[in-house]
Amino acid sequence: MKILLHIGFHKTGSSSIQDTLATVRQPGFAYLTDDPANHSQLLRAAYYPTKDFDPARAAKSRLAMQSRLSRIASDPSVEKLVISAEATVHIDQPGLEQFHHDLAAASPDISVLGYLRPLSGYMASAFQQILKVRFMSFDHLQPPGYQQSITRLDAVFGQRNVTLLPFAKHRLTGGDVVLDFCGRAGIAVSPEAIVTSNESLPLEGVALLYLHRKWHTEPSAVSMGRARRDAPFFDVLQSAGTRRFTLDGRIVAAKIAPVADSFRHVCDRIDYSFEDFCDTRQQGIASEAELLAVVLSPVWQEATLPQLTGTPFNGPLDEQHLARALETLRLKVMTQPRLPRRVRQGVTKTLSRWFLRRS
Image (cartoon, rainbow, N blue to C red; front, side, top):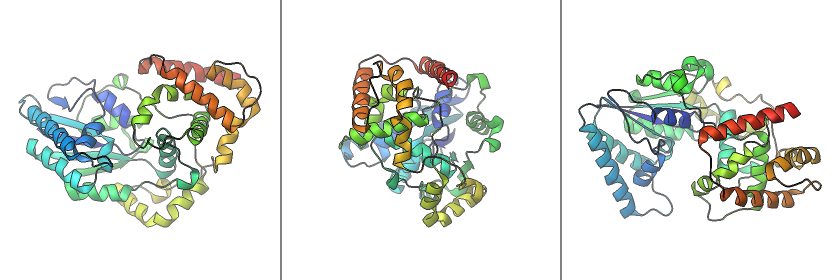
């Protein structure tokens, strides 16, 4: 049996890859679990020590992982096992070595495949992803530790077994990361079978989430638990507008300057131009004031807030009152049943078309 480990560096289509693989029914192919399609939680529980690390619970989770791997490996019909988890890139070296040991017990034929997103897109996406968990100011924006993760993966799995590719449309098969991954993995999938998963927020949604997290902090919210809990709230924020959230190139340039040599090594490793990977020419949001101005505009509030909150517009709201209205909205949607993903995507598209017609 061959084992292919998909490592999900941030915002490289991992959810789409996972949701698509969970639907694949192909002779000789096995996916670690269909539910959840994202195997990160399974890996975190077994191999990633957190602040509240419980050795006994981790040992139990690891034993469950070993049992699952052994069961799949003992099935003579399985020729290829695929595991997909973003958490892989965050596991420390001891945990990664334990994981490799357990994989090797099931099969010595292990390969790793992953994609890396250029920095400007990465930092903008990571910023809003962190906001889903907790508040983070612009001052604390940081570039990714790609080199550290790559060094660990190469050391544990062997560099010749780790294939890393740039997440760039012109370098992907058909311009799509799911098609590219499946093609390289030898998994037959048609374009019609691809499950599209877009969890990004528009500029207006990011501004609202930033404002909410700023005024409604939760000291204990340091895990992904808050993001899962607030998922219905994010669905509403996805319909807050249509503009794309980007960071101004000056912010990106200032953050990567001290570690530019590290990213030159990364670019050499993935055979990609440093100038393209670290492109800082884009215009975008450069400060908290610019971000909040998007949703503190009386014109924007009058046109949009009634549709979002379901309440009449009675005049512009300042930061604190808008944050309070958002918290009321969050609590309201938390009590409502959540629609299936495909239905939610259809609603978001309909609202986006409505915003475009109004503009």
